[in-house]
Amino acid sequence: MGTFEITEASSVPKGTKVMDTVFSFKRKEDSEGRLKELRCRINADGRQQEKGSCGDTFAPTSKFSCVRTICVLAAQEGPTLYQFDIKGAFFMSPCKEDIYINLPGKYRLPKGKVLKLKKYIYGLRHSAFHWHQLFAKWLANYGFENIDSDGVTVTWVKTDTKGCGSSGKLLLTVHVDDGLAACALRYPA
Image 1 (spheres, rainbow, N blue to C red):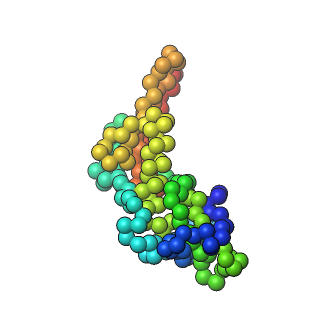
Image 2 (spheres, one colour):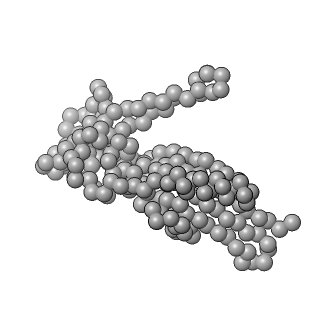
Image 3 (cartoon, rainbow, N blue to C red):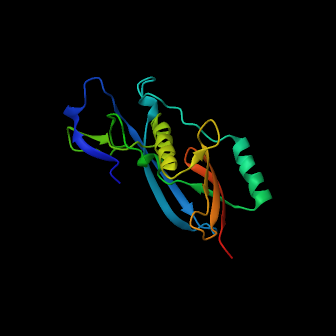
């Protein structure tokens, strides 16, 4: 995934804090309570970030009124509703500044080594902001248009340009890395 690289501790600029991290573990079970999978993720201890040192941290989230509107439109017009979670969303955003971390707990790198982040990780104050910027850019590149002032509810409309009778409409709202979509595609009979 290329989330971080091992680098020399001596390359860390003076005055830059090397942050501690923690592992978070998640146990997934099936409907009968049997173990399905174990997950582990490394998280930064964001409390160690100094306020004001990480730039913008605000990431817009969908309003309940947008979610309700999509549900009402789906009930009235018949599109299919989809709920989704974007797995590892923050790991997709390339790091725009130098952030250094240590491994969690008793795990240690060789002496004189630290990890330099290449992508944002969970726990950093500005990870959600950079994830939202990346996702909004992707949506704009694929022709989605904002329909709210926060830029978290978008629409995409495909019209029949080739005379084959197919068309479609997609409404999408995102709350950090969770989303709701209403999709209606029409194909010729």
